[in-house]
Length: 231
Image (cartoon, rainbow, N blue to C red; front, side):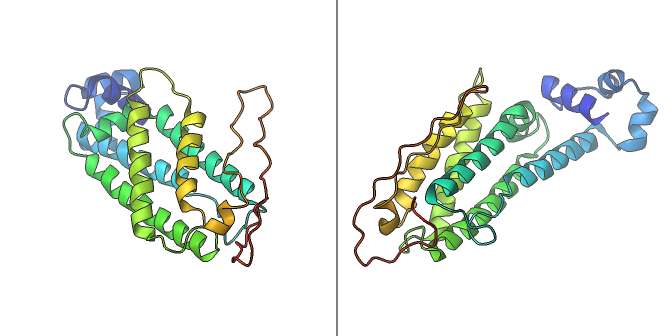
């Protein structure tokens, strides 16, 4: 029934969608609908809350530094890229509902749930930035809260651009560009000096990925090294 309701809401909007349309799509009676929901607004709220919970699970990253330290900077980049692609792909697959939520639910103010979610993501990003600084990977002069605001804000705009796209964008390429731009500013000088910041671009299905050029090592003197290997 929830899937039938989601289809009706995304096609017609909350205000225009009718309970009769939902029950007809689901093949149930109106009485069955009201056994589960007080109103169509209550039904939509459950859809939104379920979606936000699924999105939160998708956004929560695997441990990257502390619990499961990557073997190299390249490995670290690839993990970040794979995670970003997974999140953006999820948003693309659910773009109709997400677009409706960002617009306020077509008659109900549910965009605040996205705002609350964005704040939670910013806190997660800030925590990861602090861990990367402590590990010697990111610059120590960075303000983690400012970095988190910039990163989460940039990805918020990226998601909005993607869900407004009339055709499927190259999600892997967009995520790769965003990652490389941020890494140029985040990496500690001693890490950047011995690291090729390019990442392996995910290849089209059925073909082998193209590996990034090997990093060209440069003299690093007595500078403090990251716990993560640069090569």
